Image (cartoon, rainbow, N blue to C red; front, side, top):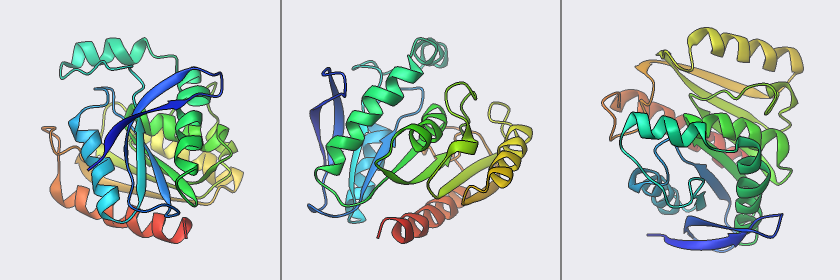
Length: 220
């Protein structure tokens, strides 16, 4: 089980996050929340990585605010400074985790998936990135500039991160020569979240297995 910690941002500010350490020097993973906030489900993902033998840290991008209501979640996400979250909160989390770990990767879900691409573009300490159904606007992070191995997991029945958007992402990655794997699932958005009505156990298990193999090979 993990615990809440406080870490420094590059600008000297402080951010809290949920950290679970398996062993000093082991690979690490920065875990990025969905639009709900740093809730028990995301903390459970951090704990799951610890049980796998990886160190993990999920920064609290909403500064203690958590919701289960879609309208409030949309309000919180809309109010987030995505550039600041990337260059300060996520960068600081990567530095904090790096002090405890070997190579580090980043994964995120939905809003956190979009920020995963942003982290892969803008944070030099990242060695691998895994994105679950999120794509950022190009002015935040151009996927063509991803400089680390990238794995993406997307739902074919997704009206937010649509199949057409995934097609465009894959075309961009191909054209830029980004090392990548893209997987698609006959599921709906949020199929990885066991607390969501969209949760699909078969797709979630398969995606987790693929992610595990990817991280094990890229963070050795």
